[in-house]
Image 1: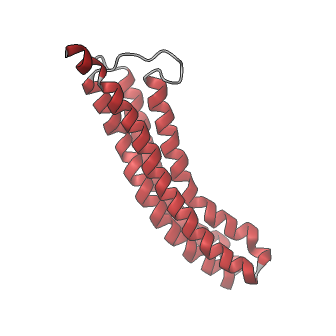
Image 2: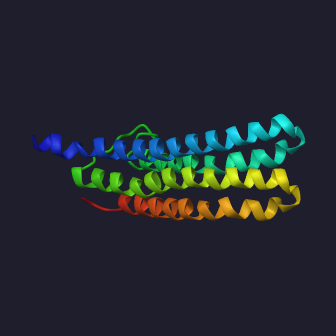
Image 3: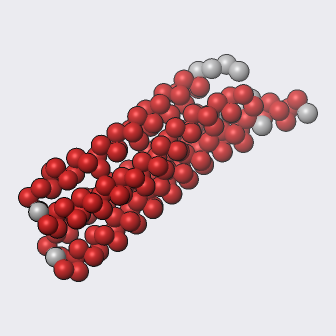
Length: 165
């Protein structure tokens, strides 16, 4: 029984990697989809705006990349990417899981809300293409919170790797 508890942390570390990737990825998929629908509507009337609306559609995709990055960091720290899986205590695995939560949830919600700002920005560019820069700042502000969550998750994952528990 003690051996199972000593190795059960690997499950929680993997769960953390999966949750970070899954939640942020779902948020990005929803966000890119919403912005893509708006962009496609614009392109049916004004195909020359493709480059401008594409930027708005791509903005919510970054959160999925952030979640994937944290997932890779966790997998790397537990040895799954290097071939030598280390024994992970239940506490350490739980810490990895906890470290994944900031980017998982902030990534999900910021991507969904960023898509709303992106859709509005697409509407602005259709009516006033010269206002692209101003319209881009609004969804970029939502990105700030995904970046802060990414930073906390990275710092936590890297800090856990040095903890002896």
